Length: 526
View 1 (cartoon, rainbow, N blue to C red):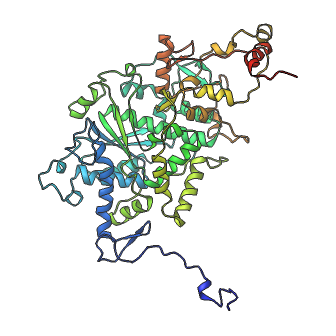
View 2: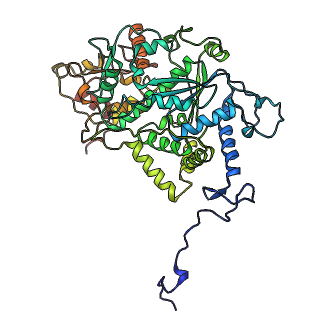
View 3: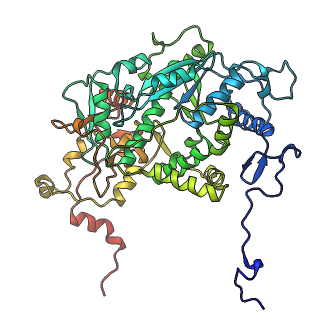
């Protein structure tokens, strides 16, 4: 009888699971030896390339028409042009290469075999394809400017327009008017020193967008808030550029791995109500009155631009690589020969990794041992449905906001307020601070948490030299300031606290009144 010593009994050793399930041969052609293992399935190079193209087309083409198609697809007729969001990373580089091969160069090797040579799907879908890059070196110290390097990379592809933006444009009035926004008369800022997020008029109109950007980022409470805000600014800059170029679709190079990271980190930061928007969303500027119907800077001569100006303009955000993992993207770039410009890490001296960075490290590390991790996360999050009604769109991120969030948050929060003489003399008198205009009612839960959730241990800001000293108010992005100026000027949902049909007001309640409210629920003393 064996004592169970692995050195003496070979059967006592647990066999390591193979990287592939059954054989080294390709699971598609069954003849060639495999070159790549994807979630325990083996593929050869010749079968891998059409597999990625198929996944790319399957995710993108059902969303091309104004009314999304089902399994049976018709001719592809988009309502406008196409805008490709490019960051220089792996996912966006692979996306740009696939878009150019399938819809610009019309590479025969990427065309479906069925339907014949003259099938409508073999025609060019978008008349104009634009690549947009947002440079973020202004947001973090010590980061290099890669605009020229990105421009040279895009020149490798023919028939593509290139638009280069900077993250500071989100605070630039000239950029806002150039994209079609109505001129902003007043300058409003927000005080991030108080959780109430009171709005104040800026002493002078900010003339330097770079200073406004850095003052805004330096006033944010945590490194997670800084990175999340930069991502939001990039997304809104791309969406407004899509309107300017008459694009009905914005495609992003979010791979399956990146999508899993975004879903988990978004839920961890309070964005669970918008979990479906992480995969695909429809965006429109709100309100439409803030936009000029015919901007002098809007490109003419494009059918897509003319269609986009008719009726309510919407942009559909699609992530065509949501079924393609990071490993598959790397294999495509290696075998096809796509150079990667790369991206620098976002951070500064003294800053700790944020929630997004920690989530990415955890999921990628788990994926090495459990290859189905990211696909399981995405499938599970796809089954989730937001609970509650929508009260409108967030003024900062442009995504749906849940009704009653601020009321719920005020009930569960523990706050200490210094007593005032007015409140002590008359407990029924409204709180004086309730009449001050605030940014809080206009925000979704995730954005409000981003601006107000502070760390127990303060972290040095990225740009401490530009923190506002005379006035605690910091500038806001142009789209946020435009909506606030419109609301304050019309008086419809400004000073009286009315937002999307809700009226919010706080007041101090006396002890006798509180006892009267709960009196019927109290047990009588025996």
